[in-house]
Length: 127
Image (cartoon, rainbow, N blue to C red):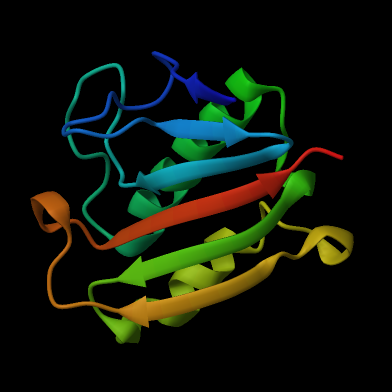
């Protein structure tokens, strides 16, 4: 059975998808961009600010579903410019500590929704 996850503490889905779906003990979260859920506007003009908002949005979804960053097993990170990799990493690593670093893919893409600088999706396991 699939369970839809939805919280007002993260941006609402802006298309035909869910913020996250739980299948069994695994949560699959849709990619999060740096939208401030309170205003619906892009938060931040640089990669560090945008990455922080993305991670806050992911945290809100994980929390709503009863998961934590410690249970994230895989992330996929999308950057508009690979030159932002080091700064993005400096924000990202604050959310995944030494003992809980998930597997990760990080790719540069031509364009992200709303022309943001980064997007991150996660898979978490609650076992």
